[in-house]
Image (cartoon, rainbow, N blue to C red; front, side):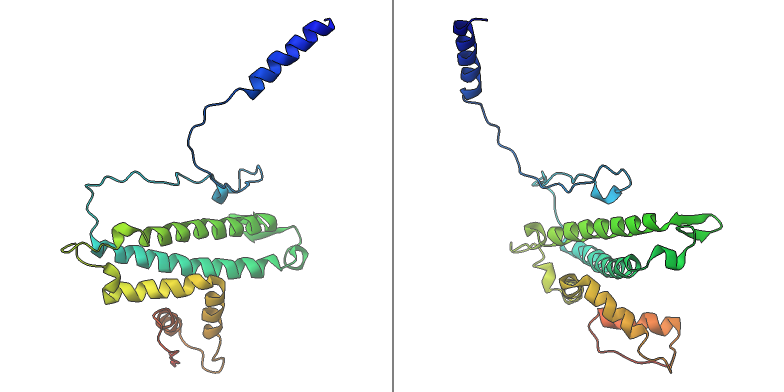
Length: 214
């Protein structure tokens, strides 16, 4: 190819690369790297970032309470999962297992897989709680139209649950550590399992700690 032909080819390539391109409006989405590991199930690509809600759909404010209770329970679970993950990650495999596994009689799992599963649980619960938190904060659950039922957050039973959830959400792991510490505060007076559960429930509701003798 002579110099003239090369020059002409270069001109055509430059023309193609500099032509204006049509742009389509889209969305910017941040997707976590799954590391190419199919076992990291909690890192699946997220769903749509926007919803197409039928404007005729009627939201009933009374249905916010079960969502709020679900969020609170998931946040409690998230805190305990984060505590468990933090504790388990610090355990050296050789100090608890001669073969790198734990369990037995049908339930055997490598220590490394346990760590990964705890990480998956952490990520999954984080995604669930973020989703529920965003849903509960949506405008359709906070109506200001007369006759709509009013703001459901003003209903005392809903407000208490939401306040609990907001408090736990600030530091799920810290909340879980405090709750677990409460279970071991009274070594001389071992409370029954029922009493322990009652104390945790009381703490969730924001009541002062109550020490019982079981």
